[in-house]
Image 1 (cartoon, rainbow, N blue to C red):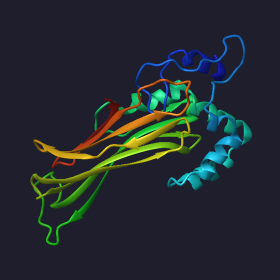
Image 2 (cartoon, rainbow, N blue to C red; image 1 turned 30 degrees about the vertical axis):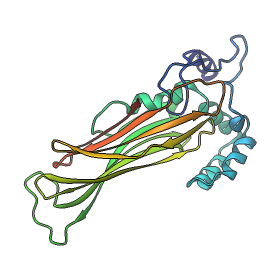
Image 3 (cartoon, rainbow, N blue to C red; image 1 turned 180 degrees about the horizontal axis):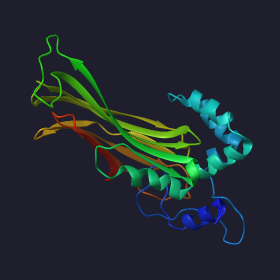
Length: 246
């Protein structure tokens, strides 16, 4: 089965959007022809997408524009198809909804589309940093981040981040200070906004979360794209996170 045939087949699954996870009716290509997936207006042609990126004030837009222009004409067309491909769009949620500490990386279409979920931690020690208990985080302020992203031909199209800031005395987490989040979204079919972040402590774990609320710009998709993204960490440095439907 070639890529276009595969795209037509998965379009009937009806789940689409940058963070798709609900049930919907996706635009379906004609069964008899070689039509590519229907596209949103701002992804209809390379020129339309270039105009969209050029008008964007979002951080990273200029770099994304440069990288997109650097693709061959054939890859630009594939890129735009992938933006509207239900399988590629749904997979970001599927691959990042499984709680755990290990980083994840999944490839689709022979590596054209790559999905990643990863954790990072930064540390600011106390002025007087005492030796931590065996196996535990050093005394000071820590910040743990969980990032979910989707890349097409190496270009980061969507990146959603949440982090939690907390203090440990070298033995236990004594205080959860705050949580926050950030996004990068250059899929012109979907608009994403962030709710007020939440931070809390549950047992030995510091938690942070945000909700992402999506609006479908492409009328061919009727889909729930409200997601909850959460990150957590404990005094031993164990980290976890997920992105899932709410």
